[in-house]
Image (cartoon, rainbow, N blue to C red; front, side, top):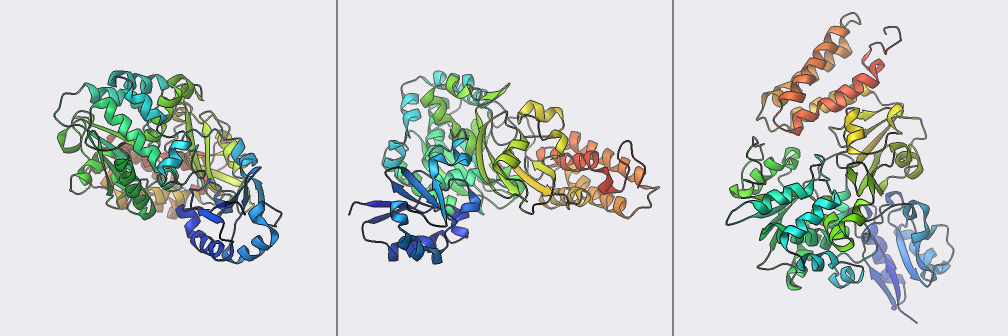
Length: 511
């Protein structure tokens, strides 16, 4: 009997619903010729654990598979790709996957994340080899020409940041990856680190080559133990293969468990061993960053895009997207969604396409009311804005942000006033406390939203004006995005769903 390869994800989302138990059950019942490969997740989270079998027609998928399903799967001939009630189809032909533009997630779910040989066999290290053939300035120029912007939220052009660090004169430079992915409804960084860790390592090594940095750190969210373990194992393999070494050494650091440490200067404080509080800028981290030295700081998805830029060329990458938003973004569907998961598409796709064509609408089956885009500090978008192209500038024009690509859906039962209160409360809890608008403003914000809910209807307009004034102060007076963006969900809830605050919508009578 020829060898049969069966793929069972090792991604945290799959592990949470029993992937290890499924793999153990298959190992116990399948013939000895069966090889079980622990791959990353394909991103179809509603089908996890998604078990795939390699057949002459391609990989055939079954899901969601429970340990108790394994005997009937084997009896039905799933090792040959035969029919079974859990049969999903040939994986690569599934419309959900086939219609995506996977550049960053091209290998995730396909390869063994810890096999460097598998990584190379599927195109890995091509960007690194190309970078080695170029002078540093030419590498930076390719990143500039690609139009790649930071995928962490600020969307600052990555090439300009690299250029600044490359031009700085210093005895030591650093490359730091911000992997403190704390936004609600986001998980792309985690999936990438668990499903294709060598891609991140390759991207950071290229950054070192381009800027003259010889040391790097990956600051990983403490709630991601599997990502930390996978990355550390991958770093050891990369060191053994010569990708890392004296020319560029890399260390994985467990984060401090604070949301504000996702802000780059607070992260630097934490990496240096201090409490994570925000630093005033200037100086910019590109000139005085980690330990006071020039530092490239990007997030996971930004570094992970770089090998593709180098391997395929900047213009090929730039061909995806629209306007000044070039390339692709892995969007993450969460909240009240029927088919939650990761969808990588070029910029320009609409929220409606993502939420309905891919997400299938709400899990509850009720009408969708609002979508929060860009994490807990992102704006709530009403239906009138669901057909806007997902593009940094188009979203900024309506007071929203694309952020890290997280999309959290709410059905018609959502109380937007309570969600606005939650945004202020979240900021009050997570604020580092350094600046007054954030520290005090968020606490006062909770109080004002409570007063709006409890007030005599005749007095509500006065409290709403106070809330708007408070938001304006936080927006323009906060030291970092934590306080500066908290008004986004509050104001968008107030503007688009005034009836939830007990005030009149434009053109309607007062409540």
